[in-house]
Amino acid sequence: MKIGVFFGGKNPEHDISIITGNLILNGLRKIGRDACAVYLDKEGKWRLGDELDSVAFFKKPEGMDRLGRWYLDLEKSRGMMVFKKKGWGGKTVAIDLAFPAFHGQNGEDGTMQGLFEILGIPYVGCGVASSAIAMDKVLTKLFYEQAGFPTAKFIYFGRRDWERKKADFMNKIRTGLSSSLFVKPARLGSSIGIAKVGNEKDLSFAIDVAFKYDEKVIVEEGIENVMDVTCAVIGTKAPIPSLLQECIFSDGFFSYEDKYLTGGGAQLGRATANFEIPARLDGTMTSAVQNLATQVFAKFECSGIARVDFLCDM
Image 1 (cartoon, rainbow, N blue to C red):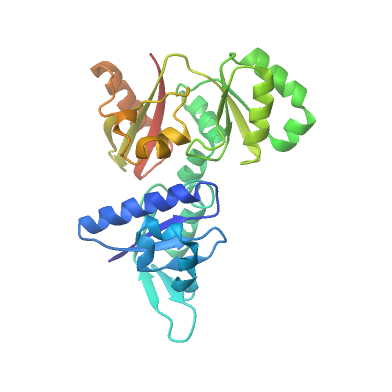
Image 2 (cartoon, helix red, strand yellow):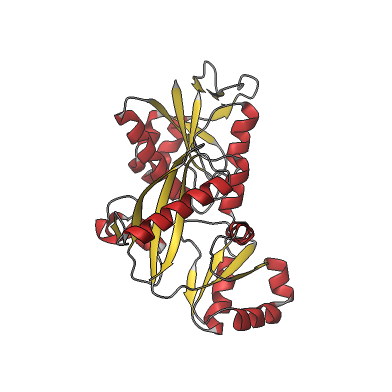
């Protein structure tokens, strides 16, 4: 069975996806699996080749042309994904199982999962609906409220409404939320475009920046004395929670720099000073977080693997 590790994509998290894809490829091969890199470049073109197994390869853009041009053969892609290299006598690669390693829009948000579903290829992780909802911070929080899960207070709006009713929204934020606020693009991850603000001037600027990344923005009330905790969940019928990871940060939130740059990146497992496993919580709180994570997993109809993040007011 050939496993295709899909990464890249047309979104601001493209480079992070390359790193994730590389880590998964190396992990699969360590346990003896036949894994193949399937890269979607920033222009939406497919690339396959052994060179894609190394992050260092992507630092030399001129090498990409040597891989040639590939296309997805929709005629033969039934129960598998068949990629063919353009040109006379081009190589063919058939993928039996897809392992998506995309981050953000056009990959992590249900779009690629929908393609897998149409072609009938089995894939790792959550389905179309749960991926689409969980990628959207606004839909996620509305879902939380409906299900009775605790979540920080928030206000959201689209670009057109913001441009037409800016004063109204500023007043709603001023009167409805605390003075400590987070501004976020609604459908972007890796802390890109996120800002912590404490005054109206910075708030307006942060919203304008967030709109550079998305057509929908969320302003969320900050949690004081916060501990950032993550719980992974695996399974489907009887999901199992992981040990808890505590993310340690210095700039008011777990930033892009903390995750991927400082000391090699906490999310990459290199900056060990930036996280604690298990988290520094007592047994009662640990169990409460794990139980809630499995409830969220089930309510969103997640499957395979997922991650649930918590902001604990200590």
